Image 1 (tube, rainbow, N blue to C red):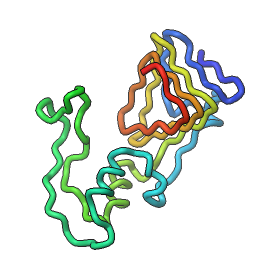
Image 2: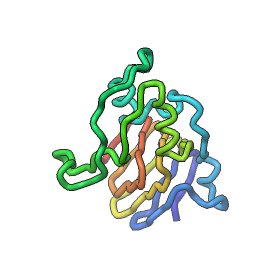
Image 3: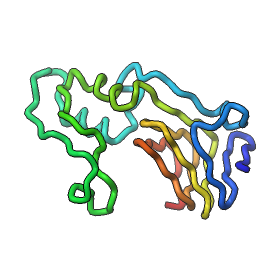
Length: 160
């Protein structure tokens, strides 16, 4: 069973831990599901940064942009990571917040810890469309799986 001491969550070797955690666990006090009210709420997500830079929200003019494809073998990046998961047309700059809300059900799962440790042989699974991990130090020697996008906001990340 995962250990939570002084704000540090350490998974046990070989353990699989799902987030959001059940309310009966001590981890539940360190997690929250927040409503996305502005782009500042999701500013740490790479896809939001890239789309915001690509779209000009001040002009508000329609952008002629290519339709995004779903995940396919031919559009994976060189490191084997899947491409952007949304299938549809990109929004205008003024519609970026609505676009982010649509693909995330309007919610952001946030895990806030002093430190987060995933040792070798263990797995952390995040099931929310958007997950943000806030910690001083994050150590990942095991596996971090996510069914959506993950932003890790920390002072130090190790073990990858």
